[in-house]
Image (cartoon, rainbow, N blue to C red):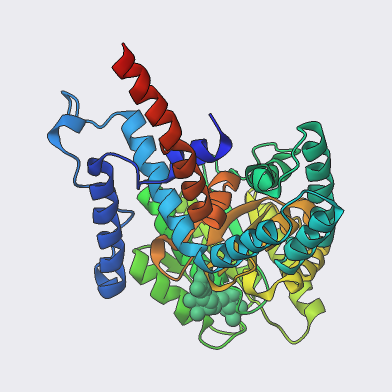
Amino acid sequence: MSFFKRLKDKFSSTSEEPKQQEDLEQLSEDSQKEIDEPQDEQPAKKPKKLKEADFDDDGLISIEDFEEIEAQQLGAKFRAGLEKSRENFQAQLNNLIARYRKVDEEFFEALEEMLITADVGFNTVMQLVEELREEAQRRNISETEDLREVIVEKIVEIYHQNDDNSEVMNIENEGLNVILMVGVNGVGKTTTIGKLAHRYQAEGKKVMLAAGDTFRAGAIQQLKVWGERVGVEVMSQSEGSDPAAVMYDAINAAKSKNVDILICDTAGRLQNKSNLMNELEKVKRVIGRAVPEAPHEVLLCLDATTGQNALSQAKSFKEVTNVTGIVLTKLDGTAKGGIVLAIRNELHIPVKYVGLGEKLDDLQPFNPESYVYGLFADMIEQNVDENEAPNENEAEIEGHSDESK
Ligand SMILES: Nc1nc2c(ncn2[C@@H]2O[C@H](COP(=O)(O)OP(=O)(O)OP(=O)(O)O)[C@@H](O)[C@H]2O)c(=O)[nH]1
Ligand SMILES: [Mg+2]
């Protein structure tokens, strides 16, 4: 099966049976309700409109059906969130293919330029295009049209190299897990904490939040509002108090209340950068002393719309704290979704979640396949449909041979 066909079958709902389409419509109605009635938000919606036939004797849906619907849901999320990037990527690639019909050095140079402009990052682009050159030669591809699928496939491959399944969060089933959220001001830390709390709670975990941004006016209140929305407890002290003390108390409270996951907010802005970094170090030390393996994750929030600037922020944070994963927020707000690849390839830190919008369920676990599906969905589907459409000449020939039987 071709790569495009596999992606389409997995993530698209357009060619699926009506039942699944209905489920997705119900799901998106539910999401819409979340925007309209935020006070009524409930943890993650599950498909509701499954017909009787989909349930077995115990009233359970099969794992296959569930996974299928889940993948389609994910496909729909990435598709919606990456709309701006997709319009950009698809239009540019179509342009290139139309302009340079033959695979030659000029085409590769134009492709390099296009990818660099889309924030993919210089080194990553060089590696990607070099591998494409080799692949084109190996497979004897001379028409740029025939390179479409190879380009998309290579993007996934580039992401997967050295893959150690590191997109998965390091969350233990037993005991208290501590997640520390870091990043400069305005990147989406607090919002992401709210969304993450919502996700974990929907999974049946007991979640608590710690208001570690004691510097910015209103920051504690903002986290409390998220706590109320999601229905989780928020541990806080007064503005200006020592964030390390907030964390210390929060950990003790979390331990005594058998909390599974404590998510800690931190300040994005202090008097200066070295204060910010010193504070982070101290917070991390206190957490580590209270729970030996903690923090289990140090998630760095980066704003996708800031492009290459996000990369330099990551470098600064990496110097002072052991960042275990990236949350790339506001991917929905940029047409340069290539930043995901630059982060992965140049920082060697896995992207664990991406922010695809402002709604509660718009934080999604990152996965390279759903990402490229979001980036090229229309192109993928069109390509598969064209290849699947019965060739008129062939149909005729078959018709003739049938008659002659
Ligand atoms: N479109 C979109 N907006 C987002 C996303 N994530 C966060 N935002 C918005 O980004 C803005 C800043 O988010 P915050 O969560 O307050 O950012 P912060 O890092 O906590 O900021 P400070 O507390 O000032 O350090 C808010 O308006 C959020 O709604 C996303 O994935 N997509
Ligand atoms: Mg904040």
